[in-house]
Image 1: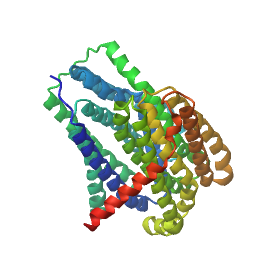
Image 2 (image 1 turned 60 degrees about the horizontal axis):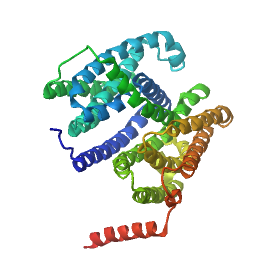
Image 3 (image 1 turned 90 degrees about the horizontal axis):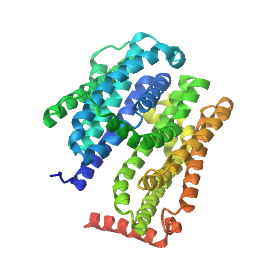
Length: 444
């Protein structure tokens, strides 16, 4: 008998864990940024962005297919886990070969082509991909608590190690130190929960795979992979171009502002992940889906207005106080990235709705168009006006992405009445009444 999934419990656990992770991660990033300074912060951003791009390409969306496959047929767990473990070792081999061939191309300017840096890069990239595979296997077999513990425990361990070692030991190479304490907790907890999962589920390793089954897994994941990859590059590709045209000090200053956009994107993704099952379940109820989208977009709009006012009023003072005077120019980058924050918030909501319709091809094509515009603008603007140009290029490309999404929405028959996406008076009345209820409860 198929186990019934407690969706409400799963969402609650995931929501609490994600919010905690974001708060811990944001707080830690303040201390790490101050500790590293602009130049090493820039090198760290380049390292993490390159690693994320490579493991996503190695994966080709395989991990994204696992929840769907395992929720349909749990008997495939042995085969898929065995293939995942084998692919984990392939990752090491492929990454070693890639580093031997391309190390000077990717790492020469970083001045980190010493073996220790390359080893850390290979370890981090491979273990990150395997940890994502493990999390999505857990999601597919309804091990939500275990999945969320694997999300948050490496981060908590990272925090403990960062402050303990920094307080008790003299550190000569800050960059290596931060990388090591980032990687070791991830390795430990990933291996721990991999072993625990094997014992709990009594996984029997079977390396005689059904080729068609594995191909099917990649077919399911490839469209989600392409859409996710191009949206990721739309956010992160400017990191590579700033590395090419500017110094790592400039990259460090820019990446601090870009990280803020990434945090907002994570929040948008969290909201989207909660909306997606609702949209999919209401496939024949266009009116309810449009109401949800309008009201969520309105909440985002209000939050963005508050953020904008706060940033213009006290943004520079807060950045100087929290991150130190070295990062004061981050304020200018923040201002230039503000439109991107608006466009990203609304675009993520709309994109989630399209995903609920089965990942139409346009969810892949539109980010590619925006990415090409982003690259072109960056190539023109970065050499002339530096990191501000990168921020302007990002804002423009996000604006193009949102306009294209809206154009696609209003010119397709995904819903019976596309104009119902536009805000209505009852949406403002609904939010006003909700705020009144919150205020009334506090007084009571």
